[in-house]
Image (cartoon, rainbow, N blue to C red; front, top):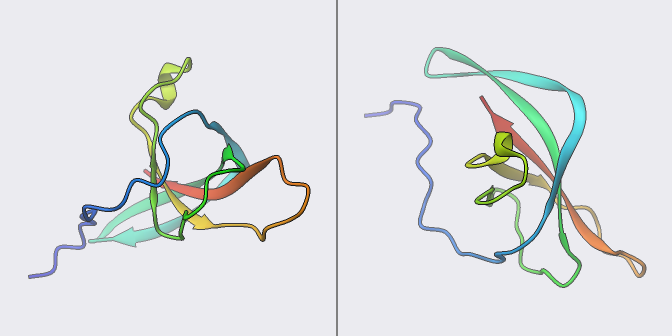
Amino acid sequence: METGAVVPGAGVVVYTGKCRVRPAATWGREARVAATEVSASTFQVSVPFSVTGVQRGMSVEIEASPDPALLGRVFEVRFIPDMGDHLTARRLLCEEFT
């Protein structure tokens, strides 16, 4: 039976540690899930340059933050920019559905 619910798999932890979260855009996109309208907000999540193995579709969960509004939020990695010679961080384009 299909319900339209998204159930995350066990997954693989690629990185645990500090990151930077900031809005990537002031707009969101809308979609329908199981007859309910949801909107997606876009964020940039920066992790250290040494982090590798991040793939599209993976989740980023905020477990600790000085900003209490970020605690417990989960973002889905939508785009990973190309690699480069002078990168200081991996800046992941992520979405959060609400």
